[in-house]
Amino acid sequence: MEQGYKNLHSRTNAASVSTAKLAMVVMGALGTKNNKVKLDQFLPYELDDSFSTLKPSTREALEWALKNEKMPPAIVGMIGAELG
Image 1 (cartoon, one colour):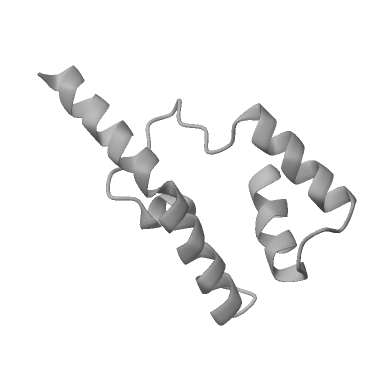
Image 2: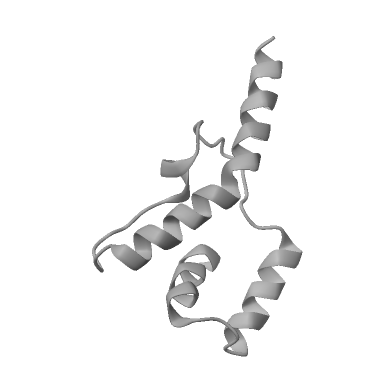
């Protein structure tokens, strides 16, 4: 039963990641420079330690887009923090 709840929480969080990232972009655009928001603040359940928000292929695509300056500066700031 416990494993079922963990699975449900993981799937619910995974389905909410895109909405949470959009909320982070909005907060970054509307907030001040000292406004630090994290992805897990916008998810319905706490993240487990094994959760990764980026697949390797996504990370590679984002790094290419940053390197070739294909995104607006506000988005670049958000992605830079995500990539580390």
